[in-house]
Figure 1 (tube, one colour):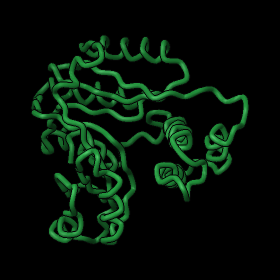
Figure 2 (figure 1 turned 90 degrees about the vertical axis):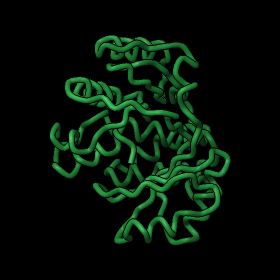
Figure 3 (figure 1 turned 135 degrees about the vertical axis):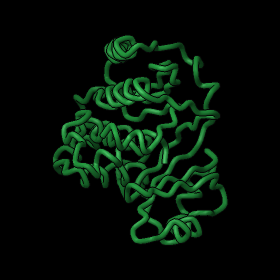
Length: 250
């Protein structure tokens, strides 16, 4: 699992994940809005929307909220325009960061993110400032259920898959694909009986850095602060976080 996924799973297991972290309802609603805009407003005809709605329901988002989030894609008036933006920069200990945001006010979001980077000893950069350090990848999560690592790997190693990362500290494993193969891999995984719970086009670092000691604590604090911002949907970094040290910090 990626470093920050490990951290999140450890906090969940120890009961230390803040239920209000990151204005969760707002984030989930924005994902529904963007998913509905990207295709059909019918979840059964739009896989991204179906997963967004399922995730919202898993997190107890009221049905009325879900309907309001889908409404703009059906032509309803009065809704603010939500756009997807990508930001790049450096955090503490020189960790490279790429994050995806969904906002109805790009100037406000950029200002707030610039402040967050600066506050934690980093700097928000220009487009392309750290992108060269990452490769584009398709990123999926699947429920592993009672499958062992060998069983999951056997079911998940289909054409288009680059890597399978079994979650020893959670219940959802990561599947890394070639970007162009993301949708096809999703279908192949489903055909093998695996339930896909998340599917996005993202990035993976070409090389990682391993902060330790106080640097590790500062990096974790910074990554958490980014994820807590209600406009931030996803955070990618090149930090490799040691599981034993994360356990000690949790």
